[in-house]
Length: 345
Ligand SMILES: *[C@@H]1O[C@H](CO)[C@@H](O)[C@H](O)[C@H]1NC(C)=O
Ligand SMILES: *[C@@H]1O[C@H](CO)[C@@H](O)[C@H](O)[C@H]1NC(C)=O
Image (cartoon, rainbow, N blue to C red):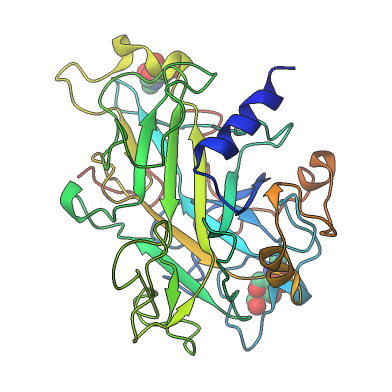
């Protein structure tokens, strides 16, 4: 097994994090629902890949739905995490104009997890760093699906082009080095590592806002990593939530004979974005009781958090949820149009 050293490396290279909880969640479903941006809509405008608790639904109003109470299983390694985490899925467009869903594979060191994402909750980079975890009903969004401008992509959302399945290039903080705010433009034989990092300051009272962003903010000066203080408007320091998604852009998707002859991008986000700048992620808190606060108050090392309930990959892989907006997602055959009939832009 080659994986153990890589996990150690992964954790070490993220910086000497004092508190770094890192775990995998397998795919729950691919579905055209979005309880945050398009509550109640079936189908929502674009397709998503979704992980976490199986109470995920087209509408998840906190007054009627509590994931920690209503979910019966979770695809996450921590058995008390019924949160939902989702992003658009990615398509490959062949030369003949048809689309296929780009599969997702487990991150290094995360065992047998089927697809999905790696989730991080980071308390800070000094032993003294402390955070207040989320309240039931809390949700947020980062990034903008309509954006096509690299300059408007938030600083900690990016793509890394991996040359091989040992994930080289490796190391360096996410979204530094050769990482890009737009889709990589060359074949990436080891896949793309997509990073989505959320803001770390909360207004202390609002569970959600109209744009799902105004109740959270970045530090007033400096960064979360440098220990920057939160602004007076958003005084409560919350854990840094980060997603990593490994899209398998290798193999047949790296064959440039199938790429557009005019040199344009063969990859496209589910909402028709061929630039990558529409990169975004959604978060809906659903940990049971004070489990997340307990995790943040102790010293976790990757997936090892003393006293936290874990489940085997064989168990979390079995948690699934039937598609609600029933339609082909582009896993088996090739689709003649994107779900939702998006134009490319
Ligand atoms: C989704 O919501 C509908 C309407 O509230 C409900 O009938 C259904 O049972 C929910 N599905 C799941 C899987 O929770
Ligand atoms: C389109 O291209 C893909 C990839 O080469 C191929 O598998 C598929 O059969 C093609 N579809 C049509 C209708 O030609």
